[in-house]
Amino acid sequence: MSARRGAGKLGCLFSILLLVTAGYFGVNIGEVYLRYFEFRDAMVQEARFAKTRTDDDIRRRLAALADSLGLPEEAARVSVRRSANVIRIRSEYVELVELPLFVRSFHMTPSATGPL
Image (cartoon, rainbow, N blue to C red):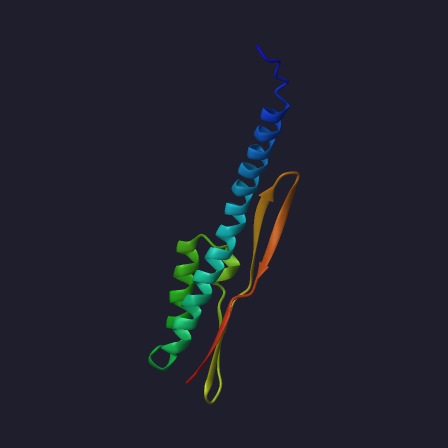
């Protein structure tokens, strides 16, 4: 019989625990950015078709998307500005992610600009 200390197994277990923890919190942070990019892509789409939609239609559609994505209420306050040949769509909101020992806030400002 050989004597085994078990130190190698404990180190491997600790490494796996760190990897799982990082993955868990990474997914939470990744979801924040996934929702941001989805919302911003919808803004780009609305800017692309702005010639055929009113400002209220654009606001209403983006507010509904913000609600369905589970974004904070302030995300639904969408600013739509038209000039002679350009449309600018913008929103601003803060998402909070709980991490061990603290809460991290992410300040998001999705926007899109397009020709009219």
